[in-house]
Image (cartoon, rainbow, N blue to C red; front, side, top):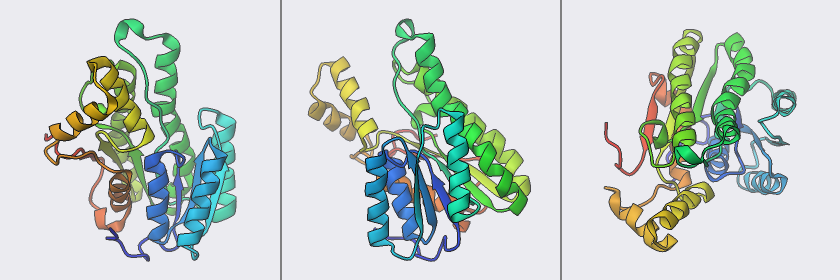
Length: 266
């Protein structure tokens, strides 16, 4: 359902990380539909090309640029920022959607697993934001949304590494929001529960194995446990991100917006 004008982000340059994943993919499409020129990045070039063609076909008046990058590497982050700004100008909308899941119960965790998850889900968004923020601050114009999780608001079984990384990301969101708003830049986060994406389905599949259920049985259980009765779609998360980036949310600062079908109310 279209709820936004195609002129909202006209003249704006949006950078969406994790664009080869479900939420990032849909977010890039929504922002382009709202008039933004978009740089998309991820590690899977075939998916980036597919997304580029889809946006070009549906939104012929916007510019689209893709950069294959592994954001865990500083050289790739530098290449991304340099290429994005050279091709489409200063970035004024940033969506930190790249991230990974994983981990185990505490006794099964390794130092390498903890560090990898924390690096990609927490450290990398900060380091990339630092680079983009320089220009935003100079121009006194920008909005940033970090894609966090309900797991950044409460613990989950076997989630020490992943949950810890998302709690940290929410802490960064709130702290940086206090700094950035002084320069007219808003920072917020979205905290989805289960989402109908590859990552979300894998999380439900893992829980199904632990509970001795089939994937289909666990999907139905998780859906029935939600007050809304269904799992969130990636497009619904993307629409929320777009709203937070827009001037319609100009006094929403440092929030962690839950998108959970009512599963967490506090």
